Amino acid sequence: MPSEEAGQNVSQKEAVERQKLAVDIACVGFGPAMGGFLTTLARETVAEDGTVKIPSVAAPGMPLQVVCYERADDIGFGVSGVVTRGRGIKASFPGFEPSQVPLAAAVSSEKTVYLLDPVGASRRSLGLRAVDRAIRTLKFPFKYAREAVELPYTPEFLRKHDGWVMSVGQFNQWVGAQLMGSGAVQIWPGMPVEQALVEGGRVRGLRLVDQGTDRAGAPEAGYMPGMDVEAPLTVVGDGPVGPVGRQLDEEFGMPGGHHVREWAVGMKFVIELRENVEIKPGTVLHTFGYPEPEIFGFLYVLDQRLCTVGIFVPSWLGSPVRTSYRYLQHYIQHPYLWRYLEGGKLRSWGAKSLQESGKRGEPFLAGDGYARIGEGSGSTNVLTGSGVDEAWTTGTQLAEAVIELLRAGRPFTKQNLEATYVKRRRGSWVEKEGRIAECARDGFQGGLIEGMFGMALAGLTRGMVVLRAEPPVPQGLIQKAEKYFAGRIAPDELEKIKADCAARGVALHDAIMDRLGWPAIPFDGTLLVSQQDALLMGGKVQAPAGFADHVRFRDVEICRECGARVCVEICSAQAITPGADGVPQFDREKCVHCGACLWNCSQEVGPGEGNIEFRAGAGGLHSAEN
Ligand SMILES: Cc1cc2nc3c(=O)[nH]c(=O)nc-3n(C[C@H](O)[C@H](O)[C@H](O)COP(=O)(O)OP(=O)(O)OC[C@H]3O[C@@H](n4cnc5c(N)ncnc54)[C@H](O)[C@@H]3O)c2cc1C
Ligand code: SF4
Ligand code: SF4
Image (cartoon, rainbow, N blue to C red; front, side, top):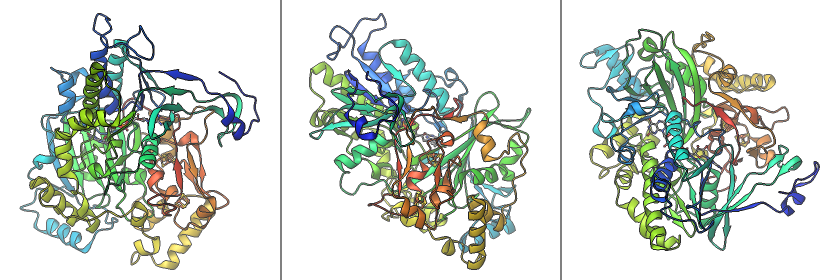
């Protein structure tokens, strides 16, 4: 591999000859989708006694060469809930028991809970205030206690009663360890894939990210150009904000009427509960109504007195000062949840975007030389609140298709992949349920009451009756502060708050939330800690040296003129801060790769595109408990 001297510029870098590797199948990302793909494939390529069942074409005499590259520094650093029915996962592991996966527990009880606002600071519509007043006054027939109402039942479409709760990090490690042990596939963590190699409308492999560069990507001492990995099939499972999936969306377009416009950032804490707390492993709570009506939440109790608790801040929350971290701190202090969480210890935290367009965000699932699986392929079901099992199942479907094609000696063309993979997917429960969910969230564009009604309607009629509305691009949903806070903060006071925050070089959300009556967070150094402290606790954040910044501002002049700076407000890890010259600053060492900045720019610089480029990058959050 050619090594380069420091000081080379980018154009010299382009001229560098890259190392090449030829394999049979190259894979991007190791999440549940890739877990399903590789587990199913590995069983059919090498027998338990090591006999080769499907030989390699790339390396004659060897077993099929399957290599998977994962961006994060380990294969167990995912972020998710998780409660899952695990239908696809159970099918892959007959006789599966949750106890096989560390920290997992069978669902023991499940409740859906409406949380009222105990502090009076959330932005509730008049209709919702009337509902809250009725609940507080009448109490009966509602099961009202601790500022919450437990719904009499959890709708069937939401229920996970036959499933289990788990940590996705532990699950990925469990799956990964079996795969590595099989010797049938290789998984390389700490290796972000820069892009798919596309030639003449066909994907012929992938390119890894360059190493040994400065922040702008220019070569420094120890420069190692990213290797080109060539393969007849490239499997893309890089999740909701994966750069390779997005590249393919740009390259090949989207099917008619499809687009990815709905998002949420899911942020969670993993908390060690105090001793003798009265809540059983396997308890599942789905919540809505607080800290803002648009924010859904969850609490799942894992094994070993750990619990996972989090919120989803959606793109349809109009606020320009969206912050997941502070909202999550208020959420866990809601009296309904705090009775369990008080006295607990923060073990780790994490954040990740969710692609909430579901089936409507489905790209072309296959093309010449490539196939898409998992959340980036539109598999997540926003009605049932389930993504892991769907992602896993799309991976298994692709693996079955690949085995069929390999055995028949047929090439990985668009036509062949459609006749095998896409056909399997279309005939499966993932597709059927995805269709039911397709418009289930549309009502939320009209507010919580309409949104909940729309969801119930879609769920109960199995998608036959829906409140349909075409979702606007995310930039169109972010309101100006003056409008969003009208009637609550006077324009001149808002200007003063903005000027003060700008002078102090801090984000706006804390000052605004304080002003709106959100109480100060009573930091205790154990569970309620500052965002900066959280970066260093449990799941700490790291960034290996020698990689280019993966978050870049496309046009700094647009940033300079931007009055909103939503990117600063939403940033899950305070990695984007207000810069001194009016252009936000990005600190790679703090970034958790949640991808929220991708869809949280208020300025539309291209169709549906903000002013931030979110590329492939290494590092991020280090926690296997998330
Ligand atoms: C807070 C939260 C709670 C959730 N709760 C639940 C729940 O209770 N139940 C449920 O079923 N689902 C839940 N989900 C959704 C679920 O996590 C996802 O649907 C699921 O993880 C999708 O799996 P995937 O394999 O498609 O993608 P991911 O899990 O996102 O995996 C993609 C992988 O690709 C890697 N990658 C990205 N870019 C690159 C690159 N350029 N090169 C190499 N690797 C790359 C990523 O690091 C990642 O490991 C939740 C999500 C969040 C954020
Ligand atoms: S990235 Fe977008 S939101 Fe952030 S400052 Fe620039 S233009 Fe504004
Ligand atoms: S900079 Fe990093 S942590 Fe901040 S929003 Fe973007 S991806 Fe998330």
